[in-house]
Image 1 (cartoon, rainbow, N blue to C red):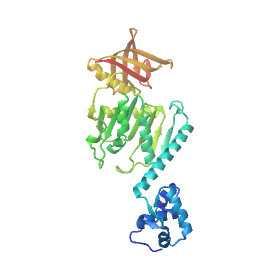
Image 2 (tube, rainbow, N blue to C red; image 1 turned 120 degrees about the vertical axis):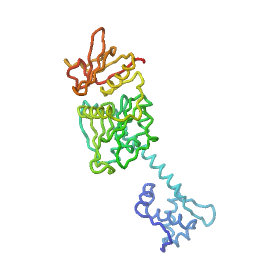
Image 3 (cartoon, helix red, strand yellow; image 1 turned 90 degrees about the vertical axis):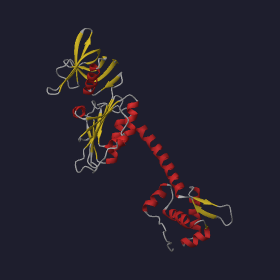
Image 4 (cartoon, rainbow, N blue to C red; image 1 turned 135 degrees about the horizontal axis):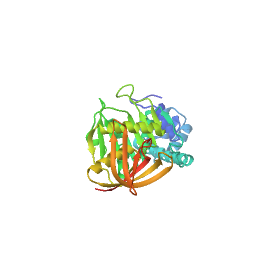
Length: 353
């Protein structure tokens, strides 16, 4: 068989596409010959491919049945290959159909409810960058109360759609953007959020409802993708990540910082304190509903009262809300509280300004 100028052979990558569509490598070669030199009759195709007529007829019928070759109504029959764009649509259609079926079966197999991090605290390692991005997006998508995203412009841009969706759903969403040499920031393409700030540098982080954190570092070079990432479901480590984020946040440059919308909820206590403190300074009257545990007894509790004071002393490590409950003063701290009356796992802020 002689090769014409610019002739494409059914190499491995092309053969994989045809194999996915149920076509053998020889069927792929028949399609390519018709694509480059067709329309052709069976006898012309036989001559050009130096193959047996009966063999070619079998593969032609297969290609016609798969929709990759068209047959005329004339005699003798003339065959021609569909365009590559049609082939692409058939490939995508089958891919999507297969994807939908597989995901449906996998979702039916997976447990309906994931275990809480506090039930089985652990840290998992991912060694694939694309999987890390997918898990970061999944964590962001699963947020229902508050969401923290830290990273360079490219990382934030990848999560833009999910981030914006979460804020529209009422999730308190905070984005801390890092300036990385070589990765320019296009401010017009930043997510449309109430809370965006900029800091010098930091890790790639997503924290969702204080239940799961996704973390990676650029340890080799600034522009090289990290070679591994962590999925963190240990509440102690997540608490440290949240503290690290908070202290970066309050020292960062403001890009956009609008007031929170009431009523709202937080699992990150220091953010609840910070936002409540700003509202109190504007003479807003606030009530706070706290879910947590009594520090001295360890018993679970749910307490509501009027917010009368906020205390944040960085040097002493004190972060505290004070509320009035039936005439009594009750102090609220974070989940690791020791000196307060209640250690809060979730804070709901209500009121009006």
